[in-house]
Length: 66
Image (tube, rainbow, N blue to C red; front, side, top):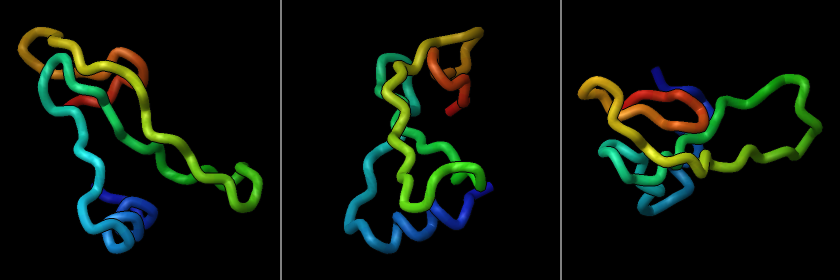
């Protein structure tokens, strides 16, 4: 499932930053916008590292799977 924020960034960037898909990669995922965030707030990409958890690549910081 893609959120509007991600689709908008894809349109504005020629080549979006790669997302981590293999163990050892940087995660790079951006959390969806929060309605309680101040106006103009831009979430930062996750700086966690992808690790191998039972054969599945999982971010050690945000918990997202590849």
